Image 1 (cartoon, rainbow, N blue to C red):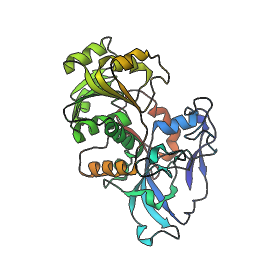
Image 2 (image 1 turned 120 degrees about the horizontal axis):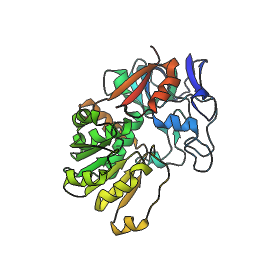
Image 3 (image 1 turned 60 degrees about the vertical axis):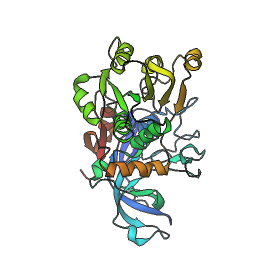
Length: 346
């Protein structure tokens, strides 16, 4: 099969298109013909070694075993099953839950042995992938491409909104609202949980599109008076912040939060380190949440909401598999709206 491997930590030159054998499913696994694989920050950071706080690593501190096929947002058709899997699964269209874990139900995402497809296992930048049968869920939409854009970013967004217990009518500020996680934060907070959303983006040309996704107000992080604008459109401090940016908007976020407000972060594309005056936290009684991925139950809840039409796929551009290098470069460009998807059959 054709696949794209990461050969070591570094820039996009570490991505190589190769021909390798099709993997064989183990007894509890299935073989999936990959139809679509959306791109996430996670495979960029895996390649760059950005998860390690002291040294380069993948999700797990021992580091990535190279070569590794990246890719975690995967849809496809089951074409073969292992010995312990029912033959009736052959032909099913599925979306893959993106990690394994021995954690108890509800705590799978914080288990010490959590291992991620595309980092600890070979992923979806390939024509075929193997995965445990129990982690293959029915596709929420009829389109492989559209169903592929939710797995990691959607689960992360759903868990963020769920974790801070957003209530109907509350005001939630979403940073990076034009990106994969951000655009889903907007939809989930507004259309599933009933919140008012202030979407923060760069280029206001996308204002109307953000409002279609559910944003009440759309503001630009390029403004010199962003904090004042947030307080003005909301008529005062906001209830919570869903952040994927990190340092660049951290001070603004804390400034506009009400007393007792909540700040939830799942990314740091705008800076991984920041200055924090602890007095801001305790004098304003702010609760902070670190968040990544979520539980199997949340994954199913999200798929149900997609099937019901409450959450829509937002796709910026597609690339063929052999253009994975160009796709990752494009992914890092600012100003895109939604997901980038690799299509192995193109």
